[in-house]
Image 1 (cartoon, one colour):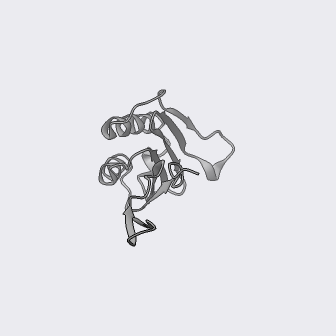
Image 2: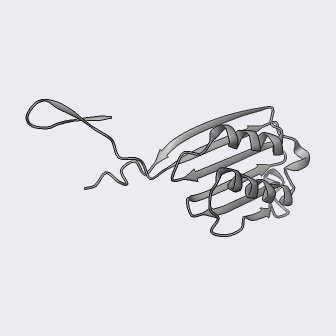
Length: 141
């Protein structure tokens, strides 16, 4: 809560405006390398994540394998546009690494996102961070 002077009897509590949304960033390390090049699996992951989080797709997921000629960048990238914002994923097969960003106008269920990611990619460890986006979006002039 932000405190504001009301000009008369001291400080009064005013609720800070909600941010535009939240970005949940999940990094997965030492994943199962056998699945990191699988376009179909990444597509299924995005579909399931959207469904389980109760979000609304604007279009089906867009999922692409890295083109040949980029050996350090082999893997899959995907994005699903949402009414609520979007989800993106990048896998790097040689590093056995996956990064997932869930951007939404409300907080995503962190435990659910991690649980689904663990089922698909079997990481040995992970990092997860959340940050508000558009903190001044509704603050007014």
